[in-house]
Amino acid sequence: MRDALAQSRALDTAGVFATNVADAGLMAQILIGGHRSQHYTVADAAAHVTPVEPNLAFLKTPMWGDVDYDAAKAFEDLAATMSEAALPDWAAKGLDWHRIILEADIARSFAAEYARDGLSPLLRAMIERGKTHLAVDYNDALDGSTRLRNAIHECLSPFDAILTPGTQGTAPRGLGSTGSPMFCSLWTLAGVPTISLPLLKGADGLPLGVQLVGRYGDDARLLRTAGWLMERAGSVR
Image (tube, rainbow, N blue to C red; front, side, top):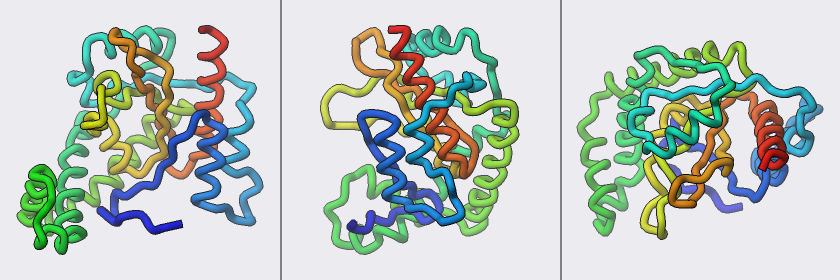
């Protein structure tokens, strides 16, 4: 397998696309491998739906105000019977921490490409901002990622997973954009596992991704929960 393009050592995360949760688990297992001390792999977890209803919580996140109206209504209907979890107010700083780390790291990683020109104006602007970030701010952002991970762990303590938007609305039309990444940034910064499921549709008929977030290092549990949610969604449609 070819190496992935390195962008940010602190943020780069390999993910998979699949038609169902079981296939996603199998692909992830192939990519990450296993360890002989692990008797239950992520592939096993994804293939076996938990028989016990998981305890899910709905989390609006600090970006909730950016969610489209019909998307917000769909999520509130889906989560009507769930508990509502919350991150501390300072968690919104995670967006700035993520941006500082990303911009500083791509300024280093893409220095040769920047010198040759040919990059998009958006990427060039990010690199130029990255060159201005102070080392103290970069290191504060790295410390912030650990602080955020601990806050997410505490938020998840009574729950199997938290449910939250994957983006601000439905999938964009065409191939010009994959949509805003802001609803993924906090989880990427903290290094916790997430999975996006096509459970909802917007008013325009396009898919509306439902994101599940799990504990740091507990990918298998998240996949079991995702499998349960997909099976339940299929049974009520």
